Image (cartoon, rainbow, N blue to C red):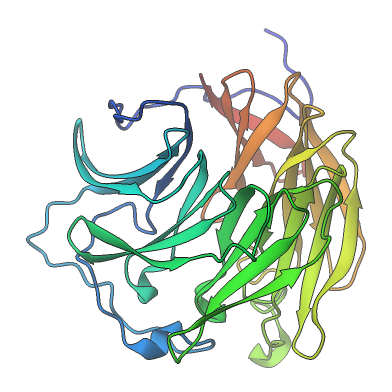
Length: 349
């Protein structure tokens, strides 16, 4: 049995936790576990939770009598978002959320310190943030105004909780917006105009801990800096840095793809002195980008040519395992070995 260097297949067995009929009447575009992958009672956080740089409080306690189960949200071209409680082979539909006027491309759970919040984005140019007030009862607490985006909103990403309640949105109008909840209860939005020519397909936040903070001398570390990586129809991935006095400014361009960049995903660095980003594209390729020191050059490594467009990427919570979804209806999982090579460790169809 032959193997290819850098893509050696090992431990190819996979297990299915649950399979169930969603009830969607059209194609499903996204499926997301909540922060814990567990049901939690709705919380009513203090308003200060919504401010930037607030110390997290323990609002995530679980009553010991609650049977563990998984909270899953799905969204579809049928214009709905569904929220399920999945326990083993049993599932319960908790909520069917309607409010979009077009296919819903993506949904995303906020950090639980802000309560039970779910964001969604759609072809209808809108972003909606839903809040669960009691078990299974969701209502829209924010709907983006018509002036925010004038084309499909293709991707959303919640900021690390250290930065407060902020949601980045990528649109086919070429702009990226960052919607933020303020301490006075209002929402405001900052836009990166013309982030990508033709359109923006994806967005991901950098982790809040600055690279190297884990090993900083004397325990000192730099203050967290807001950064985004975006992907677009101009075949580029771009890194953006927030300057409090000047707003969002382009910091780097990552050039490697020969077609649209379909997704970008910034890995957790766990305070280690490096940054890692994955990008995938219509050109069938996935690249791993690494920056070994702040302000240094970004180096690319070709993970694999999948022979079909690659749609979505997802890092593990530790940031060292990458899941890749492609147009061959395959999900493969990759891990970096100690010699720096990326090996495929599982696959499922």
